Image 1: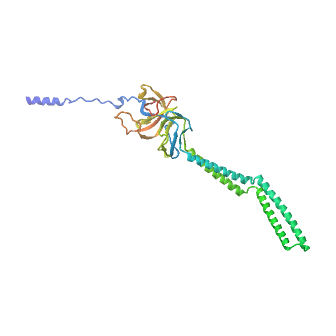
Image 2: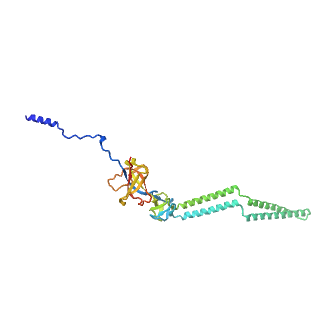
Image 3: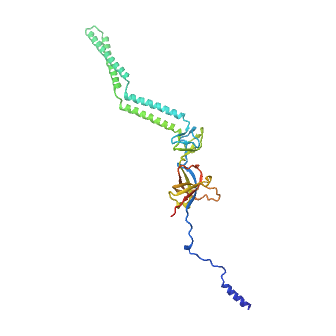
Length: 339
């Protein structure tokens, strides 16, 4: 009987399930996730001109740095100078060389001075008078010789004097022709080439001298000063003198995670918030979307934050007149429009 009861109990227990079955819900009936409304990213405030680091165009020692941090600067304004006494001397020497070359060209073009022409013409007149006198003297000696009253030596001397007078007159007439003649083409071309060469040397000396004056490329303010008078700088770019930027218009360079870049559009509304300004919200718009993915450069203070994410830079333009420090780290929220 006991065996029968055990058999019946076993059969009954075998028909009872050991756990409740989990109900199955079709995928179509699962609730869809709520649509995202914004993209969060870290960013940093920068001038719309970006930070421009001004360096010297040649190696030298700083003679003066005129501006300090926070001071306004105009485009083309001299912000620093290098020691340049030697370059100035070269400019002055080149200017003198140009003056000499120009005077030489003017002399070739203008010819002799009026006084030189007058002197040469007077010499020709004098040579003509000498020739006339020697002709008369030769005629007198010939007359005496015909009458056997003169000596042969005197006749020979008169003939020689006449030849000398002819030669002297011919020489002076040739010189007068040279003095009165216009400039030869080859002489003028040579003088013009010498002047052009001197002017080129002057332009080179001035260009080198001008490089000793370091000028601002934009209107803005001095963001940072790196060098002071007496320090050595080079044209290699590794010794900037100061950094300037146009802070009249600011923007934020934000880094958007690669998982969110498909949601970016030009003109999207954005909001900027910084811990230093509490609950203040600064509006902006997406003005440019980068084309190159890169590594994260802006990080938060969260130790759990991943720093190896790939990000895309997005530039957010702020309204004119926003006054916040350049370089400030901010939290950026970009609104995603409804589909």
